Image (tube, rainbow, N blue to C red):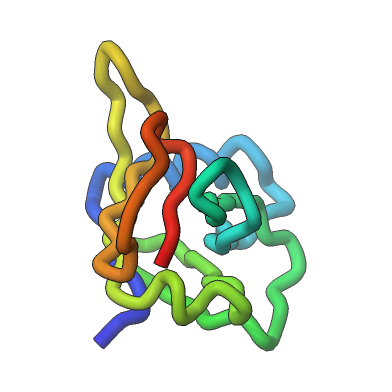
Length: 108
């Protein structure tokens, strides 16, 4: 079982991001202290892989999962949403116990 799953729409967007930054070999997914519920998702370019990160290779992309965030992200689905009201990565995380009212942060 993979740590996270990546939808085809998310993979397409990751490929586009990596094409625009030639020095990047993938993206890193993690969490940080954020918002009123405690945690927020982080997505960054990876130029130098960190041996401690968990590597997920799926649909032709590499997503490095930050080791410190691993327990918070197990089983998460990473998707891409482009709608009238929201554009960005969307995460369906079975570990979330709640979100803040604005949807910017979550807690486990």
